[in-house]
Every structure is written in structure tokens, then in C-alpha cells.
Image (cartoon, helix red, strand yellow):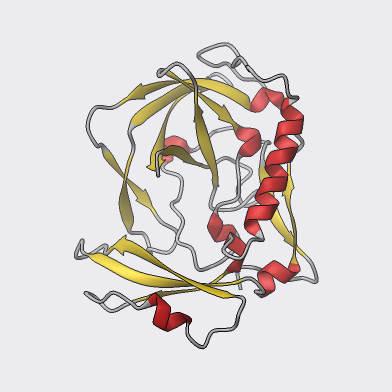
Length: 247
């Protein structure tokens, strides 16, 4: 992969082999995905009628032992009002039982890129289309611009604030071929310098909607689509016995 970036490769304070750190990250991903409330365990998302707040404790009564019930909230696309719902997680769900692993590209240090980061004053919000909103979009907070040059082309990327962490939703020509069709996610690592961040695409991951059709994932906006294949990070989840998590 030929890349040109705004800065030199990021310095590492740790003496640990980056490939070993990546192996540990993959192991943690597997543990998280197969946990009782991991992506594979989500079997139902149930939204309450407008203006109602569902009773999670009541919904839990009578459920099998492996089932966990949690609450969630979103904004109605038409009214702008809060909607409340429940999520049902089954630690013994078919997706959990049939899951083998997530296939990945080999670790490639060339895909660890440093980029410039420019904070934007105020709460700028950008529209992100979501996979289950039938073309509708939801505004998410994008606190700054990430700029870098990859393979001779300049990009200004929009990563939104995910509970204090920058989350990049990106697409590239591998989507729908060797990687998940709707794009992939990547947590952006900040450095000791406010104006610089690190994009380690070896840690690009399949979004939650790749493991359960009960998620509504944001999709990559145009500015977050790379022109060249990003052959790093996770490809696709693999299941045994012909199981398909999307059906």
C-alpha cells in the first residue's frame, strides 16, 4: 500500500510488539462479541408507543435465564421527540452458538496512519444516514476535522463523538466483497498533541449490524469513502453450519 500522510509515522512509547498488541485486541473483540450482551446476543429491539417509557423489569419477568433486558433511547426522525425501547439479549442465541470468528486481513504496519486533527468550536452536527432508516438521516456531533493524504489523495474525514471517543465510519472498495457491505468502524486514537490523531486501520471492525439485524448502524458519508482498498482490519464474521446472522 502506497500512502502519503501529513506527518511521519506515530511514535510509540510502548516496547510491546504492535502485532502482539493487535493479537490481544482481536482476542478482546472475540470475548466482547460473545459476551451475554455482546453484538451476537441481541435478538430483539422493541420500541414503545410514542410518549411511553417501557418497564424493563416487567419485560424481564418470565424470560429464560440467559436473557438480559436493557433500555435504549433514540430521536424520532419525524417529530424530533425521544423514543424509548427495550433490547433483549440472549446469551444462548443461535448467532452466539454458531459463531466461529471474525476473519481479518494480516496485520500491516503501513496502515497505521497519523493525521491532523482540527477541533471545531461549538457542537457541529452532521447528518449520517442509518442502515434501517429507509434513506433517513440522524444528526451526530462531529467535534473536529481529520485530514490526511492517502495514496496521493487528500481527505477530510468526519468522525462523530461516541461517548467521548472519536468513531470513524468509513467505506472503501472492499465493502461487499471481502469486507462488510455497509462499511466498517474505527476508533480514532488521540495523541499527546491535540492537533494529531492516529488511524490504525488494523483495528477497523465490523459494525454491530454485521452481527445482528436488530442494530441500526450509521453508514459512511461521502467524505469518509476511500478510493483505494483498505486491506487491513476485520473482514467478515464467520459462522459454522451455514448460519447467517442477517436472517
